[in-house]
Length: 279
Ligand code: SF4
Ligand code: SF4
Ligand code: SF4
Image (cartoon, rainbow, N blue to C red; front, side):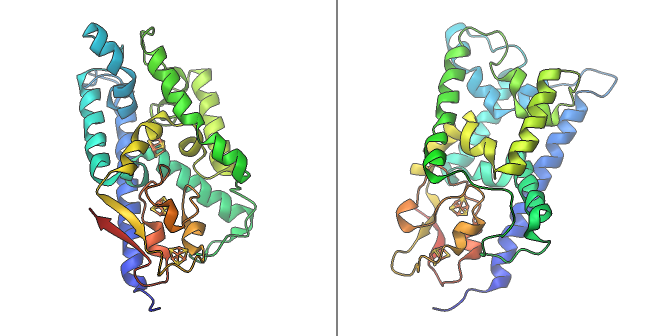
């Protein structure tokens, strides 16, 4: 059982974090752009740049030829881009690009450090920190289905609404659009921060309809993480690093919840037990 080169493995995380921060920064710029004085921003409202907006306005557009207010054809272009990434690499958008996922990872990291985890966490070792904590496996298993219900409700509601149904309670708007005059959005912002500190990627795991929509691509995307049954020792080092708490056992590959972050590839100490595979 040879160990992989740590150097090579740490570079994956560095690249991923860099990409995550670039998308996070770009999204804040997009939000700022809409509140700057002067000429009206091109491209439409902040919502027009959100892939979820494309899902929300899809049925109304098919039925009436019109997009919902605050979305436009650009919203479809953003959604198509995200679907393109997902067809190749499953939910890689969630693990590498989505700024909401990135902020949750950051909040979980802070919670861990501040609640007894210390500054330097040992990779692959379960933290002794109090937070973030995990729901009981049974509750967690059923709660993960909630996001599919949210997606269904959003799709049905979109037929009768004028604005995207999620608009008033959308964490993306609460986090990035700087529209903090709206009490409902401020409540969403506070709830998002608290839940992310308490439970890793709470919004992603239990509520996000975009994550639910993209999950299906994990089943057939050619670029995917694979665990070799014969090499895996079941040590669960990878599980300790997984941002969405997937028990990393070979039977769990192509899991709908996997965000293709490659932390398991990075963490596993057994040569070729877990690899990124094409095809
Ligand atoms: S599940 Fe939703 S919020 Fe989470 S990373 Fe994916 S798209 Fe973003
Ligand atoms: S994939 Fe690697 S880290 Fe994960 S349980 Fe198997 S041997 Fe351990
Ligand atoms: S199973 Fe691996 S690639 Fe998937 S989310 Fe967990 S750590 Fe990331």
